[in-house]
Amino acid sequence: MSSTPKPAKPPKVKSVPNHIAVVMDGNGRWAKARGLPRTAGHEAGEKALLDVVHGAIAIGVKELSAYAFSTENWRRTPEEVKFLLGFNRDVLRRRRDEMNDLGVKVRWVGKPGRLWKSVIDELEEAQELTKRNSVMTLNMCVNYGGRAEITDAMKAMAHDVRSKKLEPSAITEKTIEKYLYSPKMSDVDMFLRTSGEQRTSNFLPWQSVYAEMVFMDVLWPDVDRTTLWRAIEIYNERERRFGKA
Ligand code: FPP
Image 1 (tube, rainbow, N blue to C red):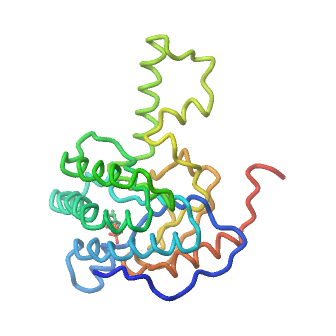
Image 2 (cartoon, rainbow, N blue to C red; image 1 turned 60 degrees about the horizontal axis):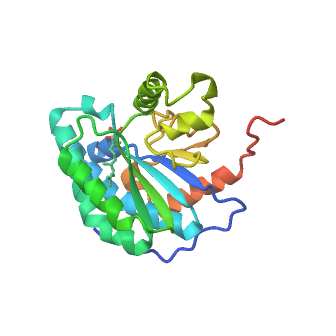
């Protein structure tokens, strides 16, 4: 599986989204259309993600969040769950040096909960290796769910209120952000979902309140950097007002 940079240059756009969230949807349908098992679709998705990382760097994106395993994905068959967790672990191991060479800072965003220790170890290894990089941050969202994130934040805040570390009347939006899984995460500017589905599926709800939604009618394994660049061109056609008239 090669992720050799392609020669195509990124388009010139007025505004490059600082933070892009990606829902990598359509692996199962891609595999089904070829008479392959669903897992083959996920495998084909690895190359797509790597090419999107290359394309994001080339155009100047500073933060990319990939929804690699959601808290709801535990509802899939035990075989698929086992495959997805093992696959995440293997991709992290296989690709961490490439990420490091690209100057990518890998960060895990999600909760330990039922997540396998071997996956957590691999996420932490990649984080440690790449922690000084600054070209782009790649948030690997593994065992992530937006409601779980907000619920866990509320729980931790309630503990701090009980132990008098936090005064309820002093709670602001900034306070809540400090309790999220990744307080350093910036607001999402562009939310991209592939496969034609138009849902956010519990991905980064707090961070995406002013994100521009871009839905592309392409299955994730068919995605490459040019898909990302096209999405950024669509983003550039939007007018962002952030509540102003
Ligand atoms: C959505 O497709 C994909 C997932 C739930 C898994 C996350 C993405 C990957 C495994 C691809 C690359 C990930 C890494 C770590 C390189 P789906 O299974 O919901 O597809 P469907 O909607 O067509 O059934």
